[in-house]
Structures are given as structure tokens and as C-alpha cells.
Length: 59
Image (cartoon, rainbow, N blue to C red; front, side, top):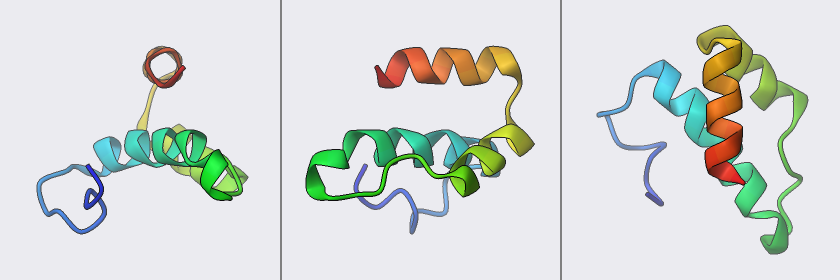
């Protein structure tokens, strides 16, 4: 899924879910983690239940 940002197949909600997954799993690469901007986008597109399920899958 390295090219998810460039792929035209994902909805805005799917992109919002992929962003924290990428940010959380790339910490070792020096990424800054899941930023407030990423969470704002997730909040705009996902319900509390969806956010919880996404976090569980990321973990």
C-alpha cells in the first residue's frame, strides 16, 4: 500500500483511515507520528466506532 496517496481508488474516508495507520507504523523511520491534523481528518470522516476499530487494527 505504499502508493495509497497517489491511487485514485480510495474514498476520502478510506484515506483518512490509512493516514494514521501509516503514521503510527512509520515511527521507526523517523515519522512524527499521528499528528493533530491527521486526527482532525479522521474525525471529519469517521464515527467513534470506526475510529476505535481502526485503532484496534493498527495496534
